[in-house]
View 1 (cartoon, helix red, strand yellow):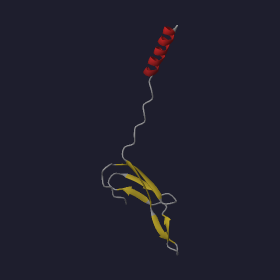
View 2: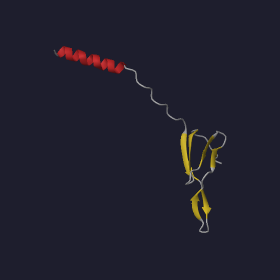
View 3: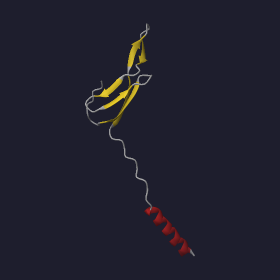
View 4: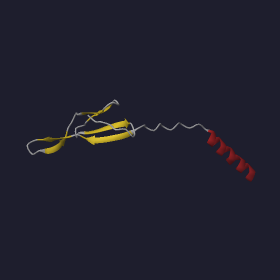
Length: 86
């Protein structure tokens, strides 16, 4: 009886290890850079987010536009390279 249980468990473990699994998603290459574009506005001179500003990483074709708060996010930037934002 014990041999049947051990044989059954061994078979189940072997079949479980042989089943195909979905491949892991690829890791995104590069780094993520987030920031905020601000401007002085109004008579009080307070800093506010600048909406709709195009932010571009020069020379690599990565760009984003700021949201209503002036925030942006650039992804897949090269690692260990100097980047000029415009």
